[in-house]
Length: 403
Image 1: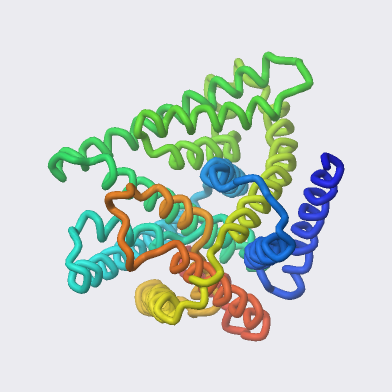
Image 2: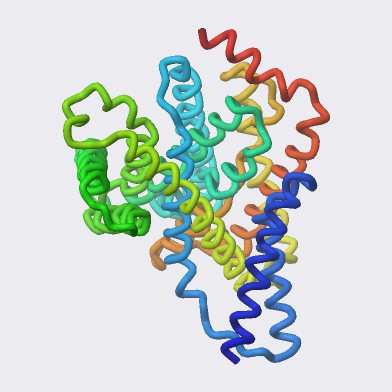
């Protein structure tokens, strides 16, 4: 039995690897294939009466680890340069404005139709308002460098903003002003903690000669993230700040820090760490979406009511995005229009909604359908991207405008 389990796990990892490879040619994100594979495993196991241990409680744990790794991996690829100031401002603004607009509109509709409290409506709207960095960043590998960076910044900050606001709504019971002040203080405190954590880690890597380093880096990040969550701090912002400091360590080379840190060794360590992190992220992400697909209720996916509402929600997501990109950013709609998938973070926040705040209009099946539909749109966008010459104009035009 043990060998059979090992064999199945190995096959699943190899299939996930093949999905990633073929995505470059088929333009179909591996995520959607993993979810479908999970659904297929569910059908086969039920048909053959195969008993599989309950893995559902692992979903939030695996998802959180995957989220940490994905944001950290993305931030390690980001370089802070003066020439990118405009790009960063536009991508972060896009994440905030689109998140706020979608949440406000959907909350208004829920309040008017279902007559539910505003706080409950906002909590149920937030998961659907967030771009999944887990899906968007991996799919953006086919884009031009500047387009890819836009997607990385936008999706990462969409995750961060969504989680911060979600936690604020769940925890805050007092006045709005007190909550905003507390949120501002926590954000500043989180950045300071990230700076201190990075400094301590850099010193340790400089002093320690033991051959095991990278596990300690990853463990430290997860540890600080968990402590930040327990203290109700914006933990994902901490991870992003941590990664940005690591990837831009050259900015500290002319400071007093250089007396205690060997920056050449530090950069080599970080380079090797990125390679290992990338492979760990692949494993965690693969098993998360496989398990999620396995526990998807198939009947709910074919409910006409769920399909209708999911189609409306998905259409709303991309209509708002189209208006913002064309009218506000004044950029060609292709390819950025399509990079607004929902995924891992949507699932994590949805299952984190308190039972008392759950509403029947937004079910797990509806969430799954929106995720699948948004990823199908992303797939379509990837397919037509190379065929549409306007998609290549983004980086060229923006380079001229940014200067």
